[in-house]
Amino acid sequence: MEETSAPDSNLTIPFSVLDLVPVLSGKGPSDSFKNSMDLARNCEKFGYSRYWIAEHHNMAGIASSATSILISHIAAGTNSIRVGSGGIMLPNHAPLIIAEQFGTLESLFPGRIDLGLGRAPGTDQLTAMALRRNLEGAGEDFAKSLMELRSYLSSDNSESAVRAIPGEGLDIPIWLLGSSTYSAQLAGILGLPFAFASHFAPAQLFSALQVYRESFRPSLSLKKPYAIACVNAIAAETDDEAEFQATSLFTAFLNVIRGKRTSLQAPVASMDMIWNEQERFAVMQMLKYTFIGSGAKMKSLLSEFVSKTGVNEIMINSHIFDHKTRVRSYEIISELVS
Image (cartoon, rainbow, N blue to C red; front, side, top):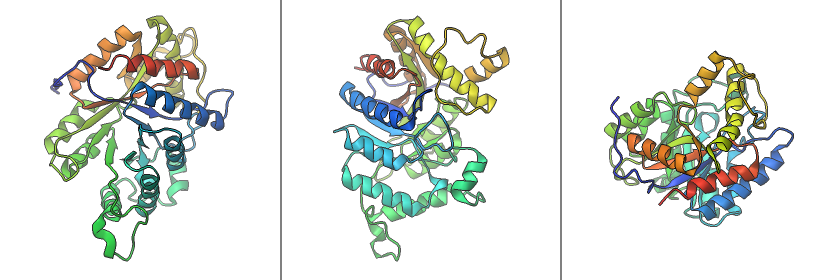
């Protein structure tokens, strides 16, 4: 797969935030919500473009299950940063409900809401069954559900027997999210912006970007392809400190591999006694696009990534245990952007 050179790799593109609303060991979801609000306010001050929250369910370490409510909470506590979903897992919901929820959000916070949509369940199969009651055709019906959702948000739906109020006729940007080429192609065909989940599923990043660009058809909402890549980034005053903080991220992914549900753990001096070589390899494969280091190292790593991918925007996920250290990581990264 041939890599694409960006028009400008000097970190002049927008940077944004993905918040998984981690639950810290020894703390509860209410602490996570307070931390997310503080992080959002700081990232707004640091100049980040958007702040997205991802829908997950039945995960002890992630408190973002009621995604739309958290978006409203964060938007109410900030002033200008765009707030949205990264994403809403559409197969878990009736399209009308999402149209109404995001119509309400856009009415409360005009011009600040993003609707990012994914086709995965955001959980395990048993929990997905509890959410949907019926898994038949859930992922396969994504395109159909998307069309239904878009129709509810369209002003052309005003004569329909079923309408989204609020929602109808509102200009709510829709993003397609994905970790494969399926959503990339669909986003391209529909002329929608696309975000790739390279922070946990790096394998098809370049293939998906190529498919998106090659299949792109200009639309009323978007004239040229616009792609976000989400990556993990942990910045600190020194490389050693960043590597230390990154062990919380490594442990979180190790627990995913082991099928163990835990809250986010404090960093450790060494992972050597925690994982075996096979587990280490598996974790690092999933975290291929994870950038760790001081500001100088981070700028080099992120500039190279932008140059190779040609993405229009970088979204940063930082799984860091200590809240103040996490905020500082985002601050260091913001200082790299022209």
